[in-house]
Image (tube, rainbow, N blue to C red; front, side, top):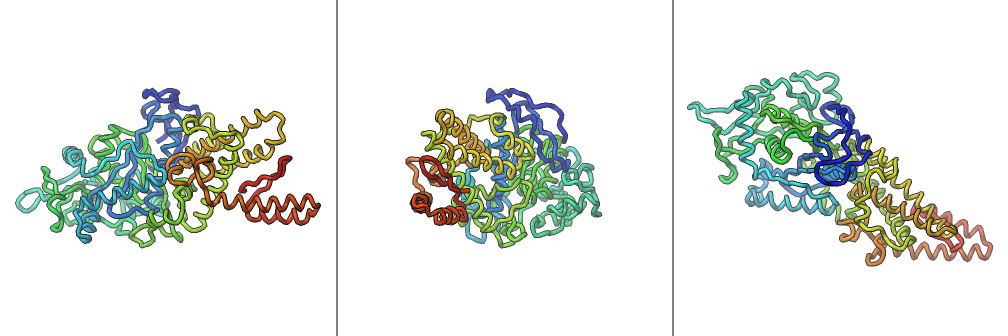
Amino acid sequence: MTNTQEPQNTNTSGALAVAKAAAGLKLYDTASHAVSSFTPIKPGQVGIYVCGATVQSSPHIGHIRAAVAFDVVRRWFERLGYKVTFVRNVTDIDDKILDKAAAAGQQWWERAYIYEREFTEAYSKLGVEPPTYEPRATGHMIDMIDLIKKIIDNGHAYVVRDADGNPTGNVYFDVASWPHYGELTHQKQTAVSDAASEVTDAMGPSVDNAGNDKYNPVDPADMSPDKHDPRDFALWKAPKDSDPLDARWNTPFGTGRPGWHIECSAMSHRYLKDMFDIHGGGLDLRFPHHENEMAQTRAAGDDSAARWMHSAWVTAKGEKMSKSLGNGLSVPAVLAEHSAWVVRYALGSVQYRSMLEWSDQTLAEAQSAYDRVANFIERAGAAVGKQPSREEIMAISADALPADFVAAMNDDINVSGASAAIFTAIRSGNTLLSKLADRADSDVAKAEVREALVNVRAMLDTLGLDPLAEPWVSDGAAGGAAGAGADSAEHDALDKLVSEQLAERAEARKAKDFARADAIRDALGAAGIAIEDGPQGSTWSLK
């Protein structure tokens, strides 16, 4: 939807005033297929609902990419001064959980809780802020049952009955009764593709491509011959014979459990009330989950989200990363080989709507980025005598950040452009550091270095990557950037090796062996190390 109202300069929560930069924020909307200006429904506040995990097994990198992507979206809203209510649900009952628990000899709720805790740990390790609310599906059965009643009463769902007229537990949404069905994914109520559907089908499943595809297997309940129309979907499902007795709930339309989509309609309405600002999730949820969710919410008489945002997939050799395809990388396995900061940087290295190819090169580039960041922060902190506090960094408004960073973030959360702005600032900061000893006005020079340091850390913090924030400090990822009290064996080893080379180069220059001095400089440069010569000697930094 296109919004025309300008963001307000104050909010009703008593929080910081909304930054002037908020007026420039533009975001993509899946429903309109366009980038448009963002204006909150409630001045100074933003409500976001993001579909969380189905806790059937361990989290993999594909799962966590969406969490990181929307964490960055949330952090930018917070940096703009908005009070954010962020809801992320937990699907703790579904066919996969029931089937896998039975196969493993577990209680279904036991399995769900084990893996919910694994997801929580993964989010925490990768610096994803805890949600304002994290509701479980099993805690909202009454909300779901009430919502289904409203949909039935409004004539948009039907109860399947047996030969004796008794409700079976199956309730289906009547797609034919809802003329707006397909609006989210820009599809028409037809099996014939048009030009718009061909574009969106190329990005993910849609209403015109609803077969049993490898990314979205059809719910067995949705294959029932009791449906009036092949497009109808389950709101409530009769139990399978194998379902445990404690995985069934009694309702006016029979004993059973909820369909997949109804929980998000119920929980978003419970915690965000009427229309809220943003509904987010992975691209693979666009259809059928979000299309069905939008339809049933509105058919119940409630408002749906004002804007829908979807993060693209993590791919491995061009194929979507998922457990069902056997190419998922578990988060614990990846973190066993790489620091959490590096993994988060890699996951957030491209804009949320862009596919992210996961490879050794992706991680190597992230490690190189960390080395450059940590080197500058450590050197700048040493030069000014003390690191700025976390409180100071968190208090920096978007209006005080470099214009190129703000412009990139306001351009539909363009993190690639934002990262480029960060490294531009680091290069400028390194130049200031190299000239610090030459400046007669050392106090002014130090103030300039400190300003660059604050800007770099505040920009990184907006992406969840300030090395001196949690969880990086406790996890040891801050390395030498933390200064005294933090150990970085890798940095110390590198510093010792480079310092030996610089000492040899200094001796060569003293002996007027400039060929040898240049050879050392060139060798270090080829290894990615920049040398700055000054009156007090030579210093080094990573390029």
